[in-house]
Image (cartoon, helix red, strand yellow):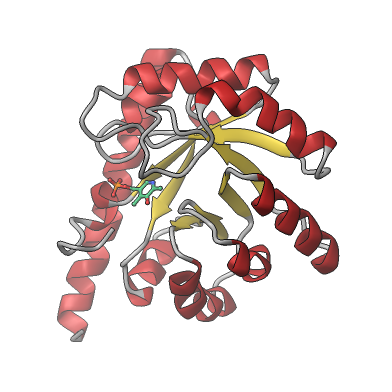
Amino acid sequence: MTLATYAVRQQDQVIGLQAVQHAIADACARAGRDPQSVTLIAASKTVAADVIESAISAGHRVFGENRVQEARTKWPSVRSKFAGTQLHLIGPLQTNKVSEAVTLFDVIHSVDRPRLCEALSRHCDAQGRQPTLFVQVNTGAEPQKAGVLPGEADRFLAACADVYGLRITGLMCIPPASEPAEPHFQLLAKIAARNGLRFLSMGMSADFAAAIEFGATHVRVGRAIFGARERGAT
Ligand SMILES: *Cc1c(COP(=O)(O)O)cnc(C)c1O
């Protein structure tokens, strides 16, 4: 990237971030919520490290990646240059990547099956690290999507604590693309409330304002900050 295009990209990120921050503040005002109660996770999958660094230079610190491999190639060098960044794993986690995920990430949003719980418990103990954990709920019961089914969430959450000794602090969902998101946000909030969980990771570029009305504490926003991803990128 030339210096001139870099400057333009850098300005784009600042504008994207500011626009999303304003929209979050507006949604909080409408919902009578404190804007500090909502964490903006900048979903930086497919975004190059220099662009991420420009967002950090603009003051942002919280980012989400959906693949362990991609995070491994981009983040160690970024983190060596900037203090205070917080990295969230927002995509599915394979058991053979748990050790690396526990090393790389501060927050994992995709806990969803017993074998993963067992591996997390083991590697957290081994590394003496305790990432913040969310359980992903497949609110639309979509066969291709990760997450526990809504009807199994209570039992799974109990097993996380009782069988695996994992402290779960929140729930995450990705509503079906073809449906209104609100009923899914409402369902996730209901499951969290009855299980005494504080955090709700829900809402993306298209619907984060609605998610805030339903109690989102973490919104995961990519395209509205960084622009459209290339076709074929997830
Ligand atoms: C990419 C991604 C997002 C952000 O999606 P946008 O539509 O770009 O805002 C949120 N959550 C997950 C799990 C993602 O993979």
